[in-house]
Image 1: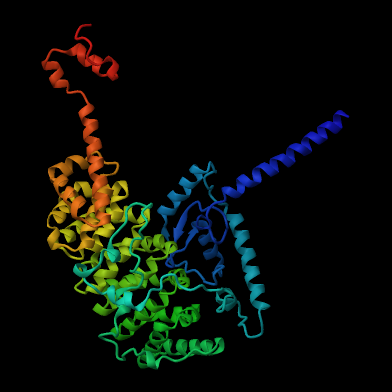
Image 2: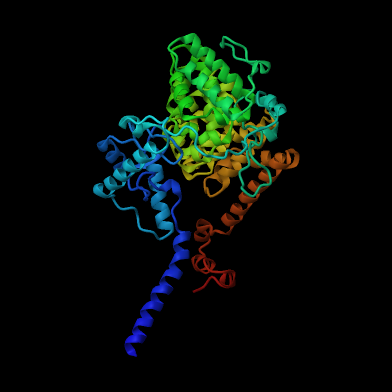
Length: 548
């Protein structure tokens, strides 16, 4: 009987352990971006490839040693030719493990990863062999071919806006409305920052200055069915891959026309084959070809479902090169493409890791207003995540941005980026060191010379700087900020009034805290040492006697 009791006890304990631990385990599953796409485990030494995807270094090493290029779940094939350590995601993984009381990822064993990769090789080869007679079956192609029609249901882009809004995006800073370009610092605010700026300025242009053919909607072919769109894709790919420059340009102009207005075409034409052909033309030495290639990419990127696919297809490095050294119009479209891709949260870290931040900072000084506009908004969206904020601070962005604010160049848009930088400790410290408080107060003092959006963003930046900084009050006092903020509180917009009121409240609270402190010099001069001792305590013991 005792034995039976023991058996029941073990069985009961085992069952209870499973039931109690299962919910806990499900709650603490790591985010999928922390897992290596090959091994499926938490990444120990994450590295990023040109497409922006992160892998564990050992997984890439095994794939290289075996001469294998895997086909990922989204149908893409990663390029392992260049890898960069991804310190940002490594730090994030370790922080997640600490917060969830999970073990830090251990160094993977080469042989265990090798077994996983070998099984994937067999799996991939067998799936290609049984997929149909039309599939090429040479060993090399079996390992590298990509499914071109993945069964994915694409949703309508959430970044679409009306045509009336597009024209407003081309307005200069002096004519921008506050709803277009004013930032909201607090998450609890009922307003949404940048509700209208979801398409690049270059997309709003009716035509291209250097393109050989005007883009007119009447010439756009109709895509009547899935089969016709497939034929359209084949025709375009043949033209884009042609060695004849005229054929390339003809194909690009046709692609640009189709994708300009037809949402369904943007989805169906964003295939691995077409993207591969398009990427090679962005590096063309012929400016017209390069410009039309990037403009076509901008059109494709307007569809939300395409944004991650484009980044993972390796377009960010070639867009950066075009932004650095392309023609003026190519730079406009490159900045627009990076802005459009940066709207997707999943792309933000990858774009920053791949080195887009510094070229975008440099592009803020471009002679083209469209390049300035889209570069600033790209930086705004990229700086919404902490890793990119820290990178921007290290690149010296604070001094560059503040000098632009002082000169009035794209001030309202530049202030959006500064507001994001002020939200992190590194950015706040750098801004306070660079005399940002005095510069921002000076902008508010000259309110008649700046637009409403710039005034609102100045107050928002000051509000961000005022939080968690003991230095702010002293710097604000030196800049005589109180009188300016009171004027904003009385005459500013609703957004500006609210922020100004809260800044003044913060300054008043700190003044009261300082008034409560003991004036040691006065106490010593009066000879009231014992009184000073009493006043250190609460009011109950404050000033009853000066004697011990």
